[in-house]
Each structure stands twice: as C-alpha cells, then as structure tokens.
Length: 127
Length: 286
Image 1 (cartoon, rainbow over the protein chains, first blue to last red):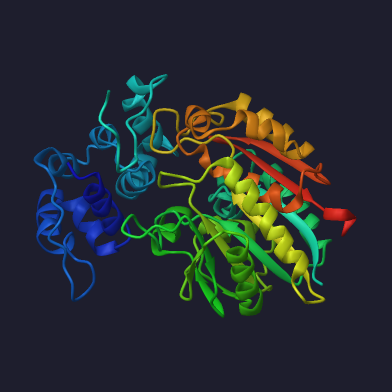
Image 2 (cartoon, rainbow over the protein chains, first blue to last red; image 1 turned 90 degrees about the vertical axis):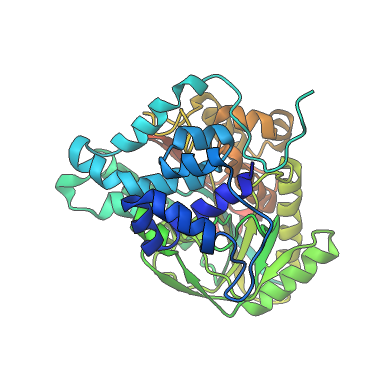
C-alpha cells in the first residue's frame, strides 16, 4: 500500500486543469497514464522507481471512491478538494449548494463517533 | 526598535469573498452580517497603522507536498505571488502580488535560528489562501510588505501546541528587537473546530460547538494555561479532523502574550464558527 502515492495522485491531478478534466471524463484511462508517466516524475528530467499503486488503490481512484480513499487514510483535504472539483457543479445545478459535500459526509456516517483511519504516512503496527 | 502595533488571530473561511460579493439575491442570509463583522474587525488593524505585516498561515498542499513538507518555514523573497489555480477554481479567490520585506525576513530567520527554531526557508514562495484570506478580510488593498511564516498543521507528525505557543513568544522577542522605527502587525489565520472530507463536514454548525465556545473564551482572556492543559493533537482530532489549525491561533496569542484581547467577535456560520481576535500589546494602538 502506498498512501503517499495515492496522495501524490490527488495532489498532481487536482492542480492541473487538463489532468483534472481527463480524470472526470475517463478516470480509468487517466489513472493508467498517470501510473505510467506522471506518478514517477520527480521533475522534468528525473524519475523515481520507488512507488506504485496497489490494485485496491487504483480501483478506488478509478471509481472516484472517496469512501474507500478515506478508509485507506488518504489526506482528507486532497480528497475533498478534487471531488468537489469533479462533482460540485453538477450537484449544485441539480440539488443546490453543498449537496455534494453533504452526500460525501452522509456516505461516511458509519465513521461517526469512531477513530478515523489515520492520514499519517507512517503508523506503528497494531499491538 | 520596532513597535508591535497589533496581533490578529482569525479563522480563514475561503468563501468569504465569494459569499459577500455575489449578486445580493443569491447571497446567503448571513452574508450582510458576515461582511459587517469582517469590516469591524478590519478596523482593528487599520487603527494600529501598521507598516509591515508578519503573516502566519499553513500551506494546504499548494506549493508543498509530502515529498518535502516543512514543519516551519519563512518566506524571504522580495515579492510573493498568491493563490493557486485550484484555489481560484474552488473558492473564487483572485490572484495577488504582495511585496516582501527582505530585511525583516532575514532578521526574523536569524532570530528564530538563534532561539532554537531551525526554520526551513523559501526564496520563491507562492502564498495560498491561509495568508490571502486574512489579507482580503483585514487589508484588502494588499498594500503592505509581508513576511510570511508557514507552519505544519496539516501533515502529521505535527509540532505540539506548546511548540506553537513558544514559537509565538520567540517571534514576539524578535519583532521587539528589530532595529527599525516601523510599526509591525502580526496577522495569522487558522481554525476552530473543523471537519473536511469526513462525516461531520458541512453541517449546520462546526463539528464541535462546545470546543469552539471554550476556545473563544481561552483566546479572548489570554488563558494559555487552560489551552495547554486541555488541547492536544488527540483532543483536536476528536473535535474535527482539521481542527489542528487552532494551533496557529495559539501561535498568534504567543506573539501577543498571555493577555486579554482588546477585541473579539465571532459568527456561527454554516460548517464553522468564524472568530476574530485582536490584541494590542502594551496598549500600542488602544
């Protein structure tokens, strides 16, 4: 599992209008090309060979599955921001302001009153 | 020596500008009250007649990411661009260019190092909404040079609440020693209880109104003992997963010292409690 790499996906796509458009329109193809050519980039000349997404992680990203991402401990700010970018306008037109954000909360309500999965990248094994 | 003219600690609701400038018929019912409160708060900075602003905020994965995330960082550039594409997209915050103050940045950086705060630094820093929101609310002309300070309230492991307080105390000593006749104001932003991307987000109130009530009481009375006795990373997590921005408000009170505010106000808004605090150290502007 690479929480870091999931966060890197959310970070790099959210800040780039063209990647964001492709992630909205064809997430499966965007996740595949991100893993191939965008995720490994350190800068224009250097690549990293260190990280990869697990199958569960890439499925969660392909499915825009913010519940699964929350449960994996993806950073809450990145996850909220990118899915607002993808869904807020359509929800707003159909169901009014904040309707997407409230549905997002509703789908996570089984976490109410519990300790959320940690967003820390390093965690000690449960004892 | 420089004069510390005012210390402001404020929440930074990124939708303030959008909420109060959209056509009146589309505005939320509280928009007019929100604007009145912000303008009254702005006056507490204007009245202090500052020449330079020390701005405290936290980068929300705009310039910095988990490949290289600074715990504490100072900007040392002659000029700062502000607000990123994804903030303009989501919040409708326009672009700004703020002048820097290299002399105070350098003096501050050295002073922090001398006091055991080994800061990261940046000579090419683009500011995000944690600094621009308080510019919009407290100094909308954006006409003063700034020294930006970023803290990590966002990517664990985080420094302790006590460390934020101590950092505020150190910044105060350095401002007091700055060899200049300028008037300096410190303006920092953070949160009370806040949930983002979790089950308690975007409710009618903030996720923990009881914490918000106590936090306002502690900050407005300068009660650092109660804050340090009650506020931990774990307690903030229980109050809402993004509540750790409260530590930047602790930092600001550290700059002022353990004294009551000259002014405080709050507004119970959808999803958060907005709160505004101003201290005038040693009666500087009162």
